[in-house]
Image 1 (cartoon, rainbow, N blue to C red):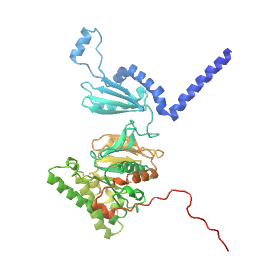
Image 2 (spheres, rainbow, N blue to C red):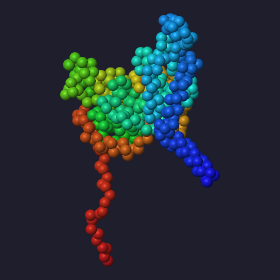
Image 3 (cartoon, helix red, strand yellow):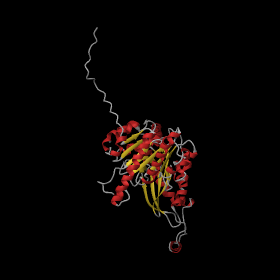
Image 4 (cartoon, rainbow, N blue to C red):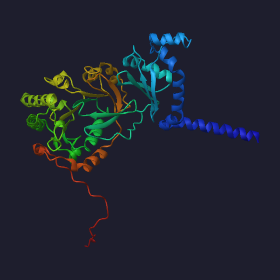
Length: 446
């Protein structure tokens, strides 16, 4: 009987260990909640002071504190680490709010993030400044970008569209009020189209006008016609469309001047024009020319794009430009246009120079990270802006059929804009659902 009991206990132990190992690989959220979070909390609590000390994140105490410690508490004066203000567990990691003592800055903590990651045994540590004197350590217990799962509260609102997941477990949101113009770069099969799908699906749910520019004969954007206010598929049509957008921008400036405001969002709701988002699928098709006769058209397109990028934010016209490369080799005006694009998202690229085109002028530290994105992880990218901050993101997999369904569901949100009517695409008719034939068969007779 004793042997049987020992055998059962050993079998149960092995099963439990196997279950924990299986959960760590197949259900990382469950493993983190049951095993990882308690272990990390214990490790963090026991080793916090010593870890901060060896990482160089402590400072000498103030004179008053040193006097009280030495003469009242009768203890040795020790360096002071940042004070812990809040510790909060999440489904993907741990959030710790620290109050920095005098002499430390957020950059000091960020520089030690890799050492903190190894000391506490977590997958990554991201340092975010929440307000002056306070930073938040966002720890992730596992690779959240391996299987992307967007937070439940990530829903399109106002002019904000969640399109990807950051490596710290939070949603990466495309905010058109903060970064009105943006550039997305990436090689073939890097996930650039998946990023655009997530963006279109989110924008389709908002009361905005979507304008598609797809000079590859519409192979990418033509399927989204039910929700598009305009779609052009050739450079000639694109030149005409951009001219109309510039004219609309000038009309909206007249409206702003008439009411004494500097932005459409300062106008009352009944006077505010509908925001317009222009989605350019491949920017190189608008810059490159095959013959000298196309130079005039190219000049008109480039001039209109630069004017829109420089001034259209206040008029509620936003640019979302995609491409494989965007450098000076495209010709005159390329670098000037790129300088106006605030938001930058760079997927896997074929060479370091392409990563530098998108990131070197806004976040130089992000260039190596963009150059090392593996091929087996499509959708992974580096997102940055002119503030200098950057983060690694990955878009969730969304099928083209899901985006088409969203465009059909929200087709009623297409605004009535007369200036875009000449470019309005004809929405394809929906295929009839399968069912029994209503035609009565007739026998064939000789």
